[in-house]
Image (cartoon, rainbow, N blue to C red):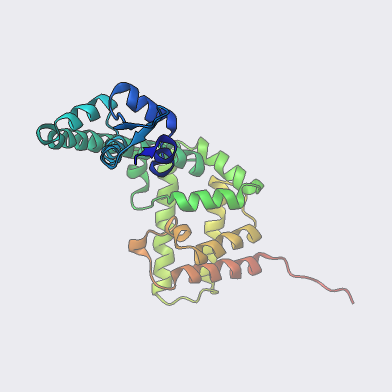
Amino acid sequence: MGHPVGQVSAFAGVTIRTLHHYDKTGLLRPSERSPAGYRLYSDADLARLQQILFYRELGFPLDEIATILADPQANALDQLRARHRRLTEEITRLRRLVEVAEQAMEVQQTGVPLTPEERFEVFGEIAFDLTYATEAERKWRHSEGYRQSMARAATHSKADWAQIMAEAADWRARLIAAFDAGEPADGERAMDLAEEHRHHLTRWFTPCPTDMHGRIADDFAADPRAFALLVPPTEQRPGLAPYLRTAIHANAVRQSPPTTTTP
């Protein structure tokens, strides 16, 4: 007893209309008919359908599938090799498109409108992590400071970015030197570096009051992706991010005006 078309449709995951089309084109004609004239599929028909669906999953057009099934020994391997080559080429093309999309996302999310070549030339080891950029955008998008920072970043030229990175590299070297020398995080040298960093952000991106600077410092200490935007992994030391966080918070206290009490 053969299988009716509705049953075949259900367990093969194809529509009845598709099975009718395969019958009409001769790709898969059911071997039997019921007394009432309905299509009935044998086990051999189901095996052929499984082959058809396999080749369809690989993206073969129906006429090529018909050719393969007509003489599988002569054509199947060559056809599969050709399809493998085309799929490999398509994967390469899609990967390029993914890279283009990521670059476009990076421009939108980091506000740095430079080509990939310019980015490498200017930023060197400093790399933007799109996962962090996405989370930062989601986290801070309602912040006026974040919006101003992104807007300012979008206006910077390649020369601006080169200067920003040169200033950052000089500051970073002095921060690491203070850390390596054992300068206390709440000492004058470390706090001066924290204040310099705050002014750097204000000058190039957005006004950065001490409370905002503290939130940025907390992010540096909590998320390695954020700290990698400031200090590349090859220059980092264990404890450097918390050290900077402590210096920034100590500087915030130092910058706060003393409270006065009236007798």
